[in-house]
Image (tube, rainbow, N blue to C red; front, side, top):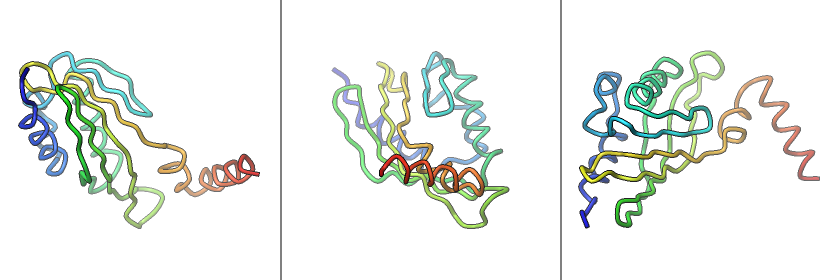
Length: 144
């Protein structure tokens, strides 16, 4: 069995130093047929994964990840992270989304499967002007 500690360290470094230039070639991190899923995307293949990362830099300003913890078992890892960014249209303050990523590495140490877990309603929608008011009201109503 391959020890994927190096693969995990490479992935953490990738996320914590991510720039628009790095998104041009993700082939050193992701396999050609990588699967990626998050609350907004469900895609397969390096071109589609590349588009997601490139689109992130279009949608928000100064995006950056801080990996807060990792767990590795065999070819599977979990990364807990804080994602910091500025919304281009809605809020001048730095925003933070907290989430986790489940990855599975291929035999060559590249990411074969990437699945993000985070609460889009709490972490994003509640922070938007009009939608946020509605989401907070729905949350309060559901908790009564």
